[in-house]
Length: 246
Length: 95
Image (tube, rainbow over all chains, first blue to last red; front, side, top):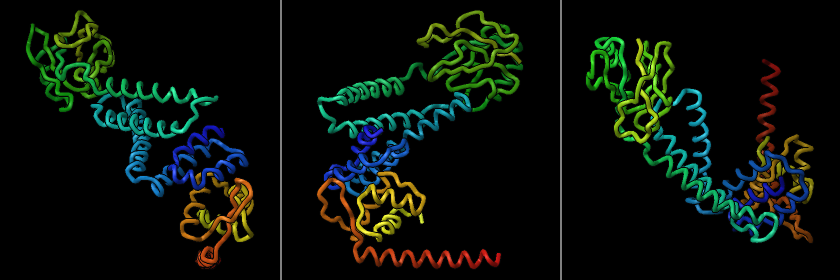
C-alpha cells in the first residue's frame, strides 16, 4: 500500500515534492495507510498541480480523470439500456480517458528507478501506450459502411411497408425495393432494436453488426434464416437474413 | 468543523507538531482521520498564508508552529463557530 501511495505521490508537482517530499515520506513511514489514502493522495496531487504546477497540466489531469468516470458511466449506461444509439460520445470519452490515463500513468512513472524491484513498472508504460494507441485506432476506424443493405422476408408486404414508415427516425429503416411477392430490402444505417418497432421482431445473425448496420433483435417465434443478408459492401460474410414478423 | 485547515490550526495550539502527530491528535480530539493528501494540502495552504511556519528539526519529520496570524485567524474562526453553536442550541431549545 505504501508503494502505491508513493507512486501516487509522484502526481504532485516537482516543486511541491522538493519542498514537502521528505516530510511527506516520513509521514507515510509513520502512518498505517489504507486504500482510501491512495485516492486521498491522488486528489491532493490534482489540487497541488493546480496550486503549484501549470494550469494546463492540471486541467488535462482533471479532464482525464473526469473522462475516466464518464467512460465508466457510459459503459454502465449501455449495459443497462442496450446498445441502441451511436457511440460518438463514448468514443470521445474513451479517447479522452485513454489520453488522460496515459498522462497520469506517465507522470506517476516518471522518476522511477531504472533498477530495483519497481523497475519493471517502467516497461508497462510503453505497453500501456501501445494498448492505448491500438484501442483508440480500433475504436475510431469504421468497421462497416454507413449504409448496409439487409433483406427481410415480410409476411405481408403492404402492412410491412406501413409499419416500416413508423419506425423511429433514428433507425431510418425503409423498404428499398420489392424483390418478390413478399420480400423487401431494408436499408439500415443506424442502430435498431426490435423494441423500437412495436409489434415487430427483427431477427438477424449475428446479433450485433458494428457501426453502420446494427441489428439487435429478439428471436421471434416464427423466424427463420434462409440465406445471407444482401449486404454487398459488408466485410462480414456471416450476416444472414432474418425475418420481420408481425 | 471538519475543515482540515481549522483542525490543523486547532491541533497546533497545543504546541509544535509534525504531520503524523497532527494526524493522530486530530483523530483523537475530533474523531476525523485525515488522509496524507488532505493533511498536506492543509499544511501547504496554511504555510502559504503565513498561518503556520516550519521549525528546525533534526530529522525528516518537519514540525510546524502556529504563527501569531494563525492564532488570530483561529480565534476568529472559533468565535464564528461559537456563534453558530449558540444560535443552534437556542433554537433547538425552543423547537
